View 1 (cartoon, rainbow, N blue to C red):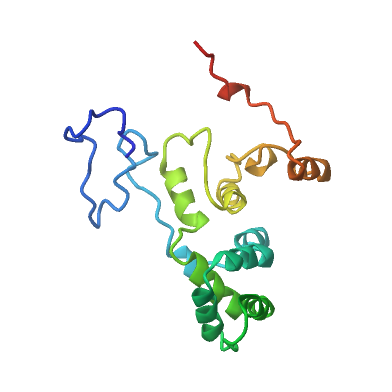
View 2: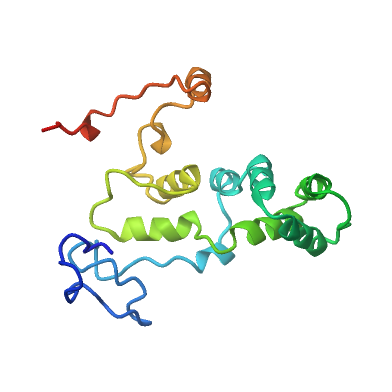
Length: 197
């Protein structure tokens, strides 16, 4: 995918590398990575004790988890209730309210989180990719941006890659939050302006 624009149509992609055990991240080309080693710290998820900041951020808020529950089909919500040994009878909202109460325990929280976001990658996985590159991109788009920014900044405290405002477009002041909620927050991004011809 990265070579799109460099290779015409269906021409042979000279950048392609067949995935194998040795090349788990073939998209990190030789001239774009920091060294001969590409990071893969997946194993650290299971054995490391997270710092309090990282633990706080990596744990998606209960409210966000409930918001995601609201997007799920009734059948999925029922399965989650069953997995948590909760009564599966009642309306969708009844089931979600039961799950919301259940989320307060760490074990159930983990179970529900895994069911909803189980297939997605963690900030650690994406950070491994970013930190393996020779140059960080100017803009990084990620579905859990705050978690990624905190994780990368904690792993590379001498540089703090996501700055200013921990990777946000503006400081998280009450005034900025209120303005954003009212769609009135204005941010100047002059480097994104392209002259029209």
